[in-house]
Amino acid sequence: MGSGPSFPIVPMTRDKIILITDANSGLGYEIAKWSAMMGATVILACRCESKTREVIAKLNQDFQAEKSKETSRLSENTT
Image (cartoon, rainbow, N blue to C red):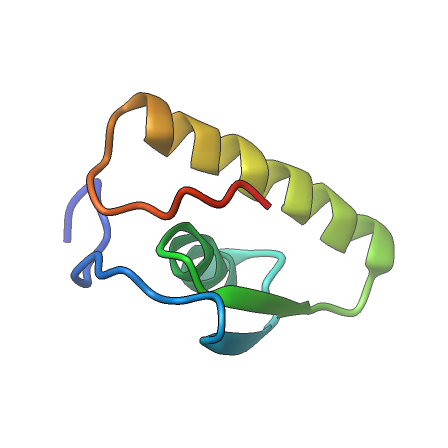
């Protein structure tokens, strides 16, 4: 384990749809974040709509932060 992802960063297409439960924290959040950054369509399954909206905003911030670090093989999609 380290400061980066524990799995290879491989490009995914938008037609790869991933449903993630409990995506507003912990492992669910990390899986959602990296799957989206690699290009997949991610559906966040959370109990609270307001928290989910906050998570979406945080995901977008994290995506921009990774882009600014020039992390390789990230998707060009920002939403």
